[in-house]
Length: 308
Ligand code: SF4
Ligand code: ZN
Image 1 (tube, helix red, strand yellow):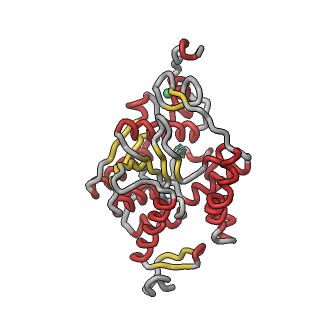
Image 2 (tube, rainbow, N blue to C red):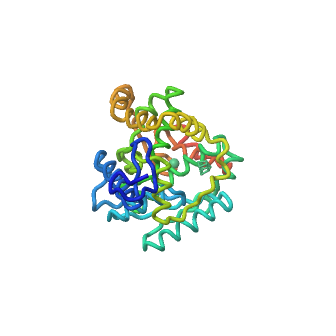
Image 3 (cartoon, rainbow, N blue to C red):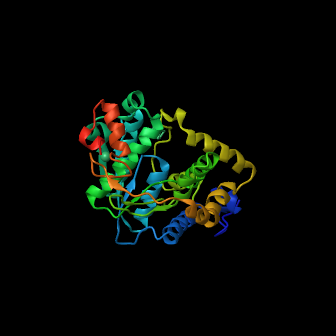
């Protein structure tokens, strides 16, 4: 198998493009796909301060690496979830990545800063483990970006993640979620702009990039992943992809091109207010994070605001 670009021995085959690449060419192709994503959605400009949410996994570290390599002003944000050895190892590898590149890693710890960890939230909260984890991440990422004066938050969601999310929302006809799914979520009062520069690249491609770049990442899955519905949709998409290479890309990138404009006309605009407890953007009196946290900690939010 030869590299489609230069003819040298190929190390990775990309079946959906009917192509194969050597290590050097794959790095260029990967960088070009990220640059195209940034450009198509006008995600950020060279002078912007970017905060990339890093979990210690291949996708977020690959994203941090490729953005640093392209010369962007990008710091990492690590959120400690308190999931035993898994979280400890994720933090060590993320810090080692930052140290090796002389990059800045901002660290927030859920237990130290907000009074609970994810295993506790799973036992005491009313949401599923991954739902409360996702809610906590979204809240902390936004707060850390606001506190640090960043222009944009970048996450390592790849094509597989986005296709699985779209499949899940389509199976339930969650019109509002479908309409709002985009590689860019614009800034709103109290909400920092969010971008997903890896949306054109598959999980296999980010894994190959991380391997070729010598990135040491957490390979094992989170031990609490069992109830994650997203994983089921990913497996379903993989089963189709293995028989029909290119299906994931046709589904998600096709949605962005042809489906999104139609769904957006059906989406209702919601007015945002400030959470009466923490000040972050919300559609109600209290934000979902403050309500969830109060329940986990067995606290009551002030009644005066509840009556509003
Ligand atoms: Fe959080 Fe669930 Fe992901 Fe584990 S699998 S890190 S609990 S969202
Ligand atoms: Zn709040």
